[in-house]
Image (cartoon, rainbow, N blue to C red; front, side, top):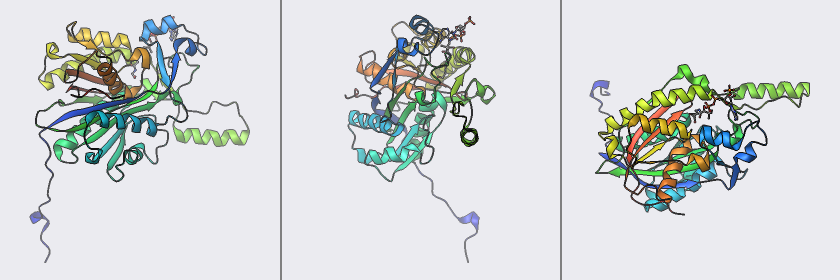
Length: 355
Ligand code: UT7
């Protein structure tokens, strides 16, 4: 006779006590687009854009620079900088909101590109907080025994979904990918995450239409032969609403993150906020009372806002340019569409990025 359900014991997994960032890599699209070029299609000026957002240039991906190819290149560099055998990687998480091919999702193709066909691989969407969410999931997987070495990629091709005649969004966004390799460690280097969301304010950053509406309109338009119709869904944003939420609410999340990590503002050596706006970064640093000695990421100046890619891209830039040193303590905070946020204190990878 079969055992009763009560007597069946289901095994659980056991993982590492701590996690660490082993390596970091970035992919920046070849084409640099200046504020002057953006102002060819909107009524604005380079000075206004720089003063209000801190942006001078952004990268725009070409047709051959896809979500998968940019992710794979950033992940390869992260693996090279980590020095670990790629065969050890047993999961890939691709954090993005701009993979327009939803099926198949991107991560399995990235795993295959890395020579790791067959491992666990999935995409994760949490707007500009995506990388922080991905890092939290990866560390939880490693501590829970679901995986040992995880590649987390933040990647966006924002410019595919931007209306370059909309002066509220045309100048802000850019494209690129950043990746980290996360692994087990006896000394813990990634703090608990402080994360959350506010669906009530979801419309502050949204698509103008969903893809089903788009398809229906294409069909209708074809039938009516109305070729001039604006069919594509675009990203629109109530910028000042998001600005206020970030400067006030997300600043508080930064303080909670430090507390959860058991780290004081004086012990932070680098502050790596999502690169949404230079003025938001300054407001957060002021709210936290960060000492002047803390290096504040300013990748937005040359890269624009790359949503889920911005924190790993900014981290890589700080390490490459010597603004931060390998092994230093950094506060990271992602925030944006959802609305959603995720903050962590991390020890920066011990090894510098590779070219
Ligand atoms: O990554 C996801 C999370 N996103 C964010 O965190 C974005 C947060 N928001 C922001 O970064 C800022 O709100 C923006 C940079 C998007 C805009 O800056 P702002 O200081 O909030 O400008 P605003 O929207 O309050 O507009 C101020 C003025 C307005 O004119 P009036 O009403 O004062 O006469 C706008 O019409 O600037 C005008 N304006 C522009 N002027 C020149 C708006 N866009 C432009 C423009 N060029 N591109």
